Length: 497
Image 1: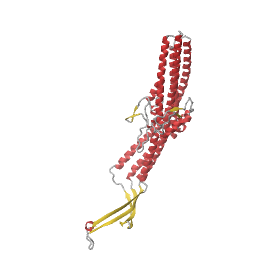
Image 2: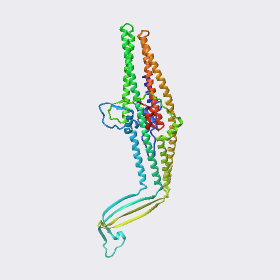
Image 3: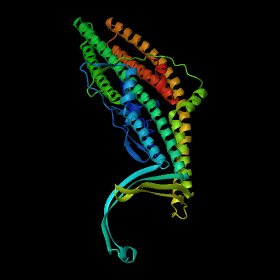
Image 4: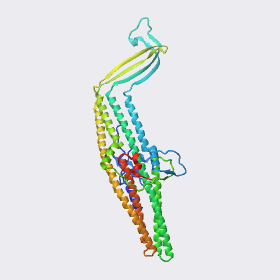
């Protein structure tokens, strides 16, 4: 239990790397970083502590939207059987990060329609009724013999449709193309959100399994300590053991009881974190039904995996479309200097009333030639240049980060696989040592100090094995995420029952 406590402290110490990328026109939900072996608080919610990190000079809580969810349905009185497959299906539907990503796509689609509207016809209608009275001398500067000085009042009616159409406006054309690229970027970001949701849910599900294994291990250790206490009490009654042996056994039993209570509390809190991320009804209890014994993952060649990541990562495709959008936005800024051509026309009925009216039409072609705009174009171009440079730099950084993530995942996978083998052997040896120590105590060869030490060693070995198996399984799903296949191949990578 002590080693497990240390491992969880390491999880809580991990920084939050991603999620605050600023975009010129589109901002998707914050993106948590992939798992690194030093910690997983950014995707497991760090339920045991409040973690703050510093990112882009902003102090934020490490509460990613991917750790939130929108509860749906009504809770049932009976515990729900929650498999990993069902948890992922619920998460893809209810997770807050995914919902925000979908909303961002809708927003980007709206921005594209706004840009497209500058190229489409604009048709409006207007109908007016009025009463006019005219003083001719004031209006035309003349008095006409035989005509009253004041004409009216008389009615006036006008109803017509107005059409405005851009014939050629290169700035609007480039801005529409830029918004189309931005929409593609948002679509890829939404796909990447699904990958992150799977990473978050699998990681928390694995942590819940780990906590549940801790509860089972702590229960077994408590039962062993209870049997040892009973054995010491019986031997004292028989005059074989001393009172101090009974006292040591009772202290050990109480210690194991406390560790069991702590393990049960950690499991209950982690299940709350998972329930929130997948949007379970508030107060819904559930049981973890999927288990993941050690399953050796056969990995492709490292270079092939890196190339697969470059081809399959949706966040890389999204960033490439952002660069394309920024390039087109710069062209649009430059096109502000170009002439534009438009058509304006209207047709309608005019008269003193609707019954006495006649059709009238107006039409004009407008050529607009920018002469001087007070430095606006230069300012827009400089701003577009800066945004393009930033997006290109972020693209190159993302390529490097993907390369590092894949390499990290391979290193983690190899190291944790070796750790699982070592810790499994340590559990076997510690179990045999405890059995022999209990036999020696039963025979009166030694006191129960040796038994208690052996039990502590077994507890540490069990905790280390649980932690190593958790780390190995997380390394596998991290590799799936790093190569862009977490949402489609998580079951193949984990190999659960």
